[in-house]
Length: 313
Image 1 (cartoon, rainbow, N blue to C red):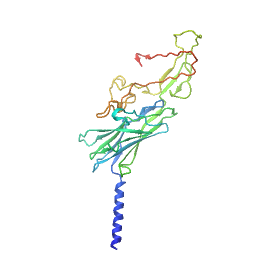
Image 2: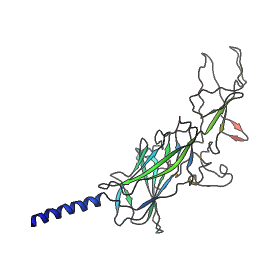
Image 3: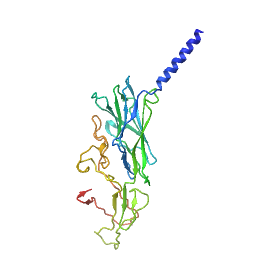
Image 4: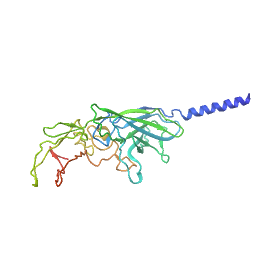
């Protein structure tokens, strides 16, 4: 009888231990995105910035180390394309996890660079794990960019982000939380005079240039042979390199709060301790024109800049 009691006691201990290992270690809830309304993602864009997600958590009773992974989903998403970092940060991306004090205790925000793999980005490694604080905190995922080219939806398509946190021996520190972080829309229209309008600047449907002129062979010409017009299909489809008072109609706002309309910069720019290139853009919106079926010995010249309404682009 005493042997039976010992065996039963051991089994009970094993069950209790297993329950602790795979239980929910953090109490968290979905917070608001930043900006609050999901960002409009241009269907022509290969590096479209999605909204930041926030996860609001209560502090832990014991210090926990682990990792945080953000998964991007959507029928038009071809993967995460956040800029790769170089130098001592090689192997990481500009996608950043912020662990922000939500207790009022004045604790400094801690930043972790992410490693991108397909449609997911993971923060925290075995060498530098994410430290989940004992005080109340917010997990904010910033600078996540996605490739949505070739979608050209008839109606806006939702893109979602699911945030998951884990650690060794624990399947999930809290229930995975999913948030809508953007909607894919046709952003640009391309047309010429007396020709149809083609939505989606990268559409596989060939466009026809307007005001086409014919020139005699072997004679140099200085007049424009044709014109192409590119226009926005929604406000903010054309973005500046950085957010400025000019681009915001006189109001200087941060990229995260003013991305519509906004800039090509990220939602978190060069935070303390990370490379200065994090969140930065090398230019404003760029549009590529592809010319096909050019005859032999013909030289095609295009302007190096376009001036309209006093704005040089």
